[in-house]
Amino acid sequence: MKKLLVVALVLVMSFSLFAGGAKEAAVSDGTPTIRLLTDATGKDDKSFNAAAWRGITEFYGDTVDNPSKQGVYYDTVTAQTQDQYIPNLKQAADEGYDIIMVTGFTFADALGEVAPLYPDQNFVIVDVDWVQQPNVMEFIYNEEQASYLVGLAAALQAKEEGVANPQFGFIGGVPGSTITKFEMGYVQGILSVFPNARIVDYYANDWGKPELAKAQAKNWYDSGVYAIFSAAGGTGNGTIAQAKEYRLQGKNVWAIGVDSDQHEAGIYDGTKSAVLTSMLKKVENSSLYALNAVKNGTFTGEVVKMSLADDGVGYSTANSELKPSVVSALEAARTDIINGKIKVIGTYKDALAAGVVPAGLKALDD
Image (cartoon, rainbow, N blue to C red; front, side):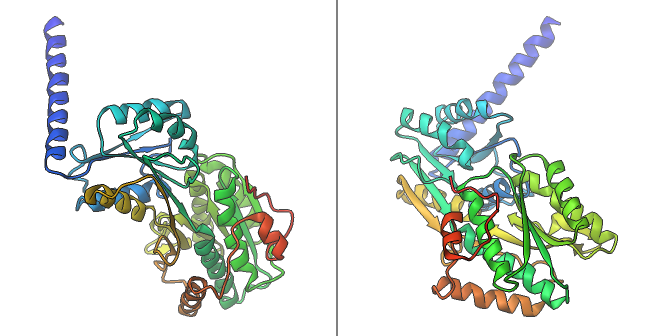
């Protein structure tokens, strides 16, 4: 028994020395190193975190399916609960990564506490612009712009399919100003085609409970809702699951994906997908931006805003059932948003005041 314990200790020490040696080698060749810290949904959430991870692997010439340099230049740690955020941040800082990247505003308070303790450490946060530390690069997005396009896509698809009086749904995760931008853009896109369309919304108050979205989606689809856009992290996977079930039964309903292209998640019959399109929040470009900034010696604490014009947001055309006429209209609208001909409002207060969204939605600006 004692011999086994000694062998186990030797193996652990050997692994630690190997990992440390690999890290030192990475640092010595001038290549930036990065650790991605995620919430409980992890890097395989097929949404927000997955996009950040995709950009990281791309920077090193890897892919998500073949992360050959993981453990040398980059890695990831998942926090199962929020009380792990601060310890995970401190551990990564103590281990000397060039960049520590966190995803989502739920990390903001923890990062605001930890960043001043490590003034020489580079931090990156996505979806936040209020940490305001000289060593924190913050990325925010015009989510409302791309959400307008997927709302427009759903409405135009319904029109092309001859759906009478189509209804539309929106499922959010935790309510707040960021998710409000998704809903506001989506609603404005729909109403540009169907000014009197019935739109329903629901907030799950959770990012990781797909069963909640699935149950709500079933109720809505059963009541005649044509398309549901979910901006709810892993929770939104429940919407896709329900749309897959119903399309397999021959029902004409759609899910709309978010952050990453969720076309494959919607596959239900051969190559057919229940995901009509996805609102793309190109967090991968934020990962690349930050890593290149370290590589070029230009990293600084700043707020970086990414829009349609910056290729920071967009939409997916992966589904061949998305009508060509719809895609043409989306491209025209994309151009009009970029040049200012179409103005998309991202706050509920201002959208209400402008009369471009209905009262009674559950969106919050705070």
